[in-house]
Image (tube, rainbow, N blue to C red; front, side):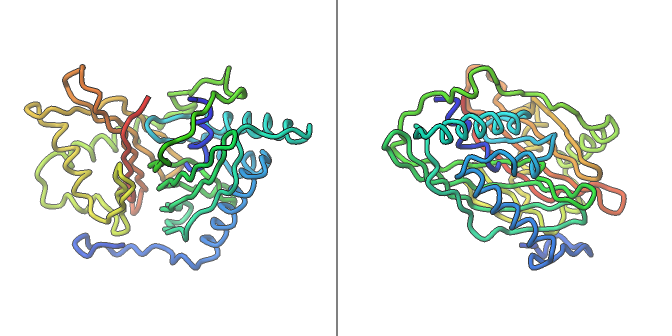
Amino acid sequence: MKGIVALLILIPTLAFAAFPSQRITVPPQSDDAEMIRRLMQEISDAFVARRSEPFERIYDENHFGVRSRPVFNSREQLFAIMNHDSAVLKAGKKLDFETLSYTFEEPDIRLFGDTAIVHVLKHDRWRYRGSNCHTRYQATDLWIRREGVWKLAGGHLTTMQCSPMPWLRPHPALASLRDRRVPYVRARPATETAIQAIVNALAKPDPVIRTYFDPSFVMTDAEGSASPGPQSLIRTFVTAANPAQDHILDSEIVVEWGETAVYMFRVRPRVSESTQIDQHMVILIKMDGRYQIVAAHVSKLED
């Protein structure tokens, strides 16, 4: 089942007045936003048709995907699945796993120069050996413009699965392609140090704590609900820094694209027997010489 479930999650992957700032994001009707919409549609169409070329062109070579855990070779896994299924279809055979449609609701696209954050609800209607399912994904996607071309750098998904979910067997294309849990390229030490300083600051009472957040900040929780307030993220850092509390941070990873950094970490209980673990993703962009948090997403860790 694990391989087919991987296929389900490989496709990603309101300003608040209390946080004053002079920065204004580009409105969603801009040419860049429209280009990102078109690329999103191209990815959706290619997923249904099992064509790998758009993924090779649109997905960044250092693409990451997060649901319950970060995966840093989801691009390669996706290619393997598309190429395998395409060969099956060309041979005139029917796929066990069929994507009936892959659509998305109107995306909330927030642009910061060569970086775009997209909050979007996606609908995946699929069938496995005659059993139908409608899976929904609330996604926070990161797009990066490289040499004038927009690339999907990665994203974090909250999955809302159909019930009951059809039984699925592992996808044969992933038999020898295990999840890669470490990035191909980590962030520079200076970037990691800067982000750690922000985490440390957010864990302490600080009257200027909200200046670390851009006005466009959106937090998506494990249930798929999005809200503009950073209180839950701040509470996570405060709790983890307090030895008297039950939770700690671990498995911290930072990756970067120019002025944009992604900080990923787990929050787990200090008691090792507990299985209650949350996976977080925080996106930061350097603005006017310092990083600001523009988005965050959390999901429950599942094996």
